[in-house]
Length: 499
Ligand SMILES: [Zn+2]
Ligand SMILES: [Zn+2]
Image (tube, rainbow, N blue to C red; front, side, top):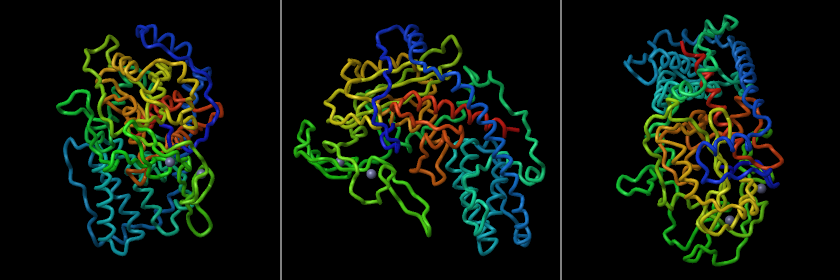
């Protein structure tokens, strides 16, 4: 997961206990709960609640300062033309009144930069249509619509959002409309959730609203079950162009073409000079510049990091050896479980392979955490991103098959799995699972796919916490926990807008 994260962590991770797969499940949970739980756990589960309330308040106060825009009085310009109306559709995924509200807000913004009312109406209608079509649920729509609104505001010359685009437009502020802008925001708090709504079966029911649809799983490149061949996955996105010659590969770090033998070894000894950071757009006087986050080098500048050899991803080329979670009878606690997971990978002769998997439960406790020995020879431990070292893997005999056995026992087909771009983890685990909440989808990038927001950014923006910044090494349980906390935050936030 950490593959192209900008965070540089060269030090080995703090030693994490490795669990053995052959323990019965009950033992496994207790052992893991006791030994792997970090000391700051209670902090982790209580602090963000406060933090997010404060953040919520802050955004409300700031967004009420905007009523100045009423001065534009867009309705005057459009008085001659009837504003478009969204037709009522019963049982629609998003209530018509919410759509209409956003459409009106879009029109207000478009009127400020479009040359005619008709043009503004058309523009607003098409923006609303895109938002509606891209959203599979009311909650996703709210996110997409708020982002669209922000985008439109940034198109208005001298708009206040240009100087303060860091401000979060809260759904309340938007949905509250003019009344909310005038009154000093005594929010309808009847929607706020009690703690028991956020655990067990109640949490499960709420999370169901954010599940990915089959369509979304497909378009986001999740492994799907092959209709005829069990154990085989199918992929509906043709992301990777297959090179015609199977002995010829393209390095996923530096882009160089290189030759491999039939067994996957590099034919020529050739160093891989690359940038390990991400490309970042930075504002400079007079415009924008794009730099690598690793060394601030410009796009196209020679790499700042030298590795022994070229590597490739390859996960989406080997679609065999997959397992699918089973349909199971309901459990005694009345719901099929909620977990967040995160995987680490290294480069082997085959491509990217699993080296560590961490599963946490909805109480943010680690319930499974193990290093995993890759099936083929490791060519690059990828320690900078995974935190997993050669020594970690030397002492493990757990294989991918062992991990799959544990997970198939722990999860059923109805278990909700939460992760950030979870398809990447599912490919590493060779696991097919359809009940998924993906934080990269729930919190979409304002530009839409293929852009995704980094988990680190989401945590900083919504929970005001910095993650993946630990000098002792990257910790996959931190990422898994972050996903779970983000979803709990999101549920609370969305509960506030429900009327
Ligand atoms: Zn660099
Ligand atoms: Zn390379």
